[in-house]
Length: 370
Length: 226
Image (tube, rainbow over all chains, first blue to last red; front, top):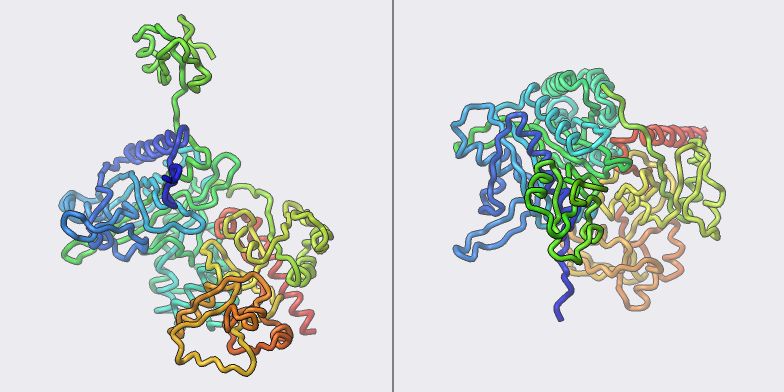
C-alpha cells in the first residue's frame, strides 16, 4: 500500500499562509538589497560536484546532496549554499566587471543532512555579496544592509554578534603558542574552561571573559596588549563598530560555529519575532576570499539568511487582504480593488461563501465591507 | 548604540538523583534556592520556582537536561561531561566545571576473562553511551557494536547480552557485586554548568547567572581547602 503522502526527512510541504510568507520574506530581503545597488544573479540548483566547493578560500563543510548525472555519469550535487556559486560567477563570467561588484541572490538550497537542532534539508536562502573589498567600509555597508533587510522582514530587537574567525589561529601561531592548537580551539568552541586548563592554555580563558557587548569586549581585548596580526584584527573590528553606531553589537572573539570559510571578520544576527526569541541565528556573513581560476584571490564580504525559520516564527512579510467578489461582480470592480492592493477571490457559483474562502472582506455591490 | 534586548525569564534544567543532591548546596551558595519539593523524589511536580527572581527550575533525566538546553527550551542546565560528550551538541556551552557528580566512564567485563583488544576487529558492548563507546573503540581500530540500554548494564555480561559494558563507575561496588572488573577508563566525569549558545549571546541574565555560580564554586573550593 502506498504511504499516505509521506515526505523524506528534512523536506516538507508549505501551505498557506506559511508558503506565502516564505515568498514574501524572500522578496522583502531581495527588494532591500536591490535598493542598495546589489544586482541579482541566478545560479542553477545543481552543478558539478567538483565545482561547487572550489570558489571560496576555505571549504564550506556542508555535506552535499549528490547524484550521478544520468546522461554522462559525472558527479552532480545540489547547492548546499549559494555564496560559493555567486563567488564562481564573480570570479569567471563577471570577472572583468569593475569592482566593487555588488550581487544579490535568493533561492532553494539542499544539504545532504540536517542537524538534530535544525533537521531541514531544503532551505530558502537569500543574500548579498560585495566582491572586491573586505575592508571596514565594505563590512559596515554589508552588516547595515543585513540589519535593514531583517528589520523590513519584521524581525525586532536585532543584535549583531561580530566574531574574529582567524584570531585564535593567529594567536596560537604568533603570540600564545600551544602544543595542540586544534584542541584549544575545540575547548573554546564549548567555552570549556576546565578543558583549557587541562591543555595548558589557561590564558586563552581571557578571550572567553572578553565576549559580550562589543565596546566592552574590544576594551578587554585591547587590554591584553597582543600585537601583530591579532592586534590588527581587533583594531579593524573597533573601526567596524564605529561605523555601526545605531546597531546593537556584541563581540565573541572565539566563536567559529558556522564560520567555516570566513577570513578576518564574521557576523551573526539574532533577533525576535514578536515575543519569541528566535532560537538560532537569523542571518550570518563575513569576509572571505574568492579564488579565481589562476589561483589568485580577491577579497569579498557578504551576508545570507534563511527565510524559512522567520516564516515558521510567524513573520509574514506584506500579505494583501482578501476580498470576496460575489457571483456577477463586474470585472472592472476586481481590477480596481487589485489596483488598490487587495487580493480578490471571485465566486464561481452561488454556493461559494466569503468565510469558507478565507476572505475577511466582501464586495457588497457598492463598496468593500468587513 | 541602542540597548540590548530585555531579559526573558530563565529556566535551569537539573538532573534527578545524586547530582541534584550535590548541586543544591552549590546553588544555595549562589543565592538560588529552588522550592524544597525539587529534592523530593516523590513529588510529581516537574517545574519549580526559586528564590531568585526570573529563574525557574525543571527536574528531568540527566540526558534530557542536555537536550532541553541544546534546543533552548531551558537556557541553563547541570549536566555531566559524559552527557555533553555523548551528544556533542554544537548548541551547548560548558563554561563551568562544578566539581560535583565525580565518577568515570569505564569499560568493564567479567572478572577473570582477559580482554585482548589488540587482536579484535569487532566487539559487542552494552551501554548508555553508544557514541562515546564507538569513538573510543574506533580510535583503537575496533568496530564496536553497541547495544543501547538505559540501566542495569551490569546484567548484560552474565545474561549473555554483551560480553563488555561501558558505564559510569563511582566506587566500583556495583561492578564487584556483579562479578565485573574495570578494564579501562574512557572519560573522567564531573558535572558542568551548561548553557544554550544563543541564550548566552542574547540574554545578559544568563552570563550573570553563570558568574554567580562560578563565584559559588570558587567559594566552595576555598571552604573545602580551609
